[in-house]
Length: 377
Image (cartoon, rainbow, N blue to C red; front, top):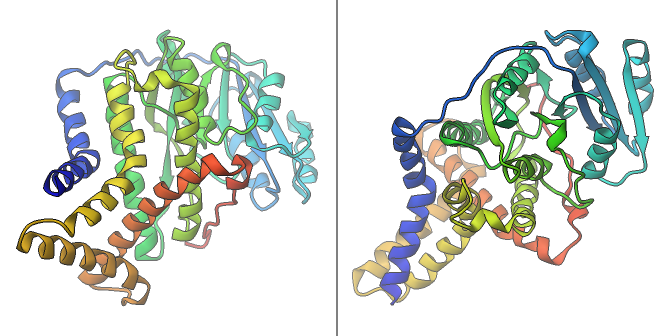
């Protein structure tokens, strides 16, 4: 039995991390589902939720106003979620450019988005966050996908600028890996979510979010998916962000993975073979939640393996975890630092996945923390 547990756990980890992406790449060669893309301007409501965003909001609004899109078709709604800094005053400076400020009592991002959606009148809702700069043609690229009536939600691509440390570079590598998976899921039909800082959807498909929603960029797209529409990835629509420190990325990952538990409760059909994306959701999203448990199972079962196999597996695991633990004290350069940084990022993400279970024992609102980035990178 210990051998079986160890083998099955290792096979599961290999499937989630490598087997499933390879499977995706193979499927897209034979079963790709293209869709119509044709630019035709449509009325768009931009919804920008902000909490204490004075550091970023002016630059963000200038980015939105600088989009290559007919200005008379764009409604810009900034929802201040009980901001206590100069955010509201800075937004009011743009009143002459038809930027609407909606101030609501602090209640979290979901309620702020609901307030914005209630004020929106455009055919398309464009959701974005305060920190990320937008490529000038990003909105055009998103809108052109709605020429296909089967498309309900279009996600853009978040580009992480190059970091100044190996740790930040490895987080960027992880993000590129995630985008590769989303791109191929989209080519097969639909992705199970969108990029929170740059995505658009038909207003007719939008539904109010529950107050404690952690992942609006999954909840809203999945509501469109279960209404019979596709959720696709448009990599030509880009937003840019600065790299986050590993500690800050860790807190964000705990929140987003906890949000997957929420999504499963809200859309249990995701786990059914009748769902058009069930294999992708289980292998990608749900699989990530189970990875730390598989790693614990391997560690525990290794003690009971026969003969030298026990020592081989235990020493291998011990070396891997030791490498991750020693990473902060490694030199800045060299192949060993490269390996230790990757190990540390991976272990950190696994701990985040394990701690995401705390969602069942705490108020979801306490999981929201400001992501710290390094603009000077």
